[in-house]
Image (cartoon, rainbow, N blue to C red; front, side, top):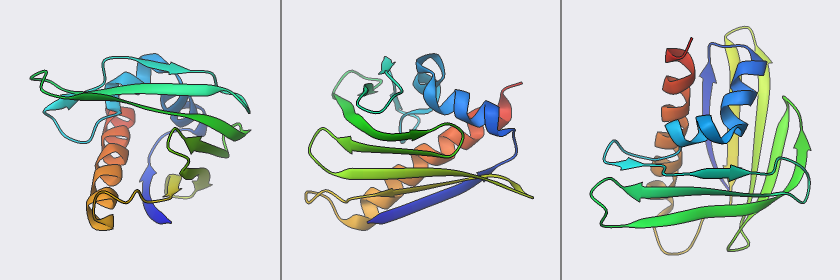
Length: 135
């Protein structure tokens, strides 16, 4: 598995809300400034499905990132299986420095692992910036 991580200065309630509500997901779920998220759907329960659209702002490319939840522990953990069968696990941990988010995910086989790590870390960094800049 590949691991990415960040720590956010915010309450666990805010971090959880911004991570799980579609109106927030569309504000951070993309890896670079020339991309955006056009829509998100999220049925946050074990067996529930999610979809987040990621698209180049110039319209040249888009795709849906989707999967099904296998575990939901509010304010603690989210596990899911992606549409291609790979697994991901996210933990949310309160620390003295803020909320530590750790994502572990199975790599795909088309791109180098370092490239995948960089993309997922960029999305996580977008999330951190979005949460910390929102009041």
